[in-house]
Image (tube, rainbow, N blue to C red; front, side, top):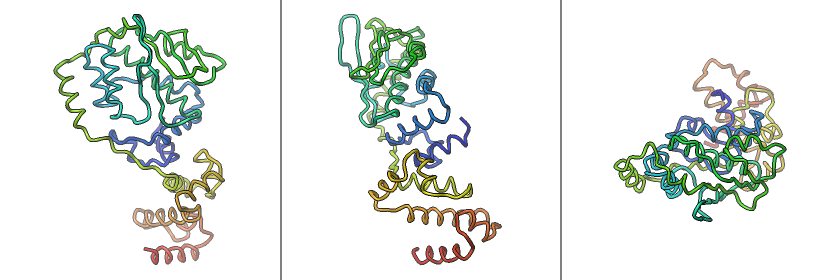
Length: 310
């Protein structure tokens, strides 16, 4: 996706632009699930989570990935991934639920979220596990069985292709992945006992990732800033931009002790202040039009109000 598309998607869920260039910020689970839904819609691709999971390569998740890749075997690497999952997420985890002589089954736990976003996040997590297992072992590792809580799609061939097994069951009570115990004993090509020991001690001392506190008022703020100057900005337009309804948006703002009118005024003030600093040649008329005022008089009165408030 282009940089512009990425920025618009980030702003649609209330994430500031700097998050796109940060490697240590943990996006709130609600925002992350909403992003999956928006990406699926923007690309018109119902299998986008499987594709992204399949492209998951070691190193994208920093220390967490290297804890996995330096382990001696696939099973031990996956166990370390579960143990240190808090380095990359507080919402998805794996836990062994059943183990026999020939197979081991792990439940995928999504602690927060529902609907389509939850389905896509789960698909990504499972596809990413399979992709990294193949990458680290250098073998065509594929699970014995995949269980998904979501309804069965019209066609399941993309799921079979992504996971390498025809045993993909839908409408299951839990999301699960089952491996052969023989595959879990496979050595990792990147195993490094000395580095693994250093990384484990380092991981125990690492501070928790920076978590963003994204509120609905902040989402509205960034949506307004993104939309101003591109036609008339109304609450209905912002609600569509955030993939919600007008009534839901008003209710969520009220829950946070604010209103649409107050957030619109706050965004106008921010845009005017920014444009005054960065584009001093803007006329008062063009500036008033950009933030949605009918004339320059309305903008002057607003500036007086903002100055008094400050």
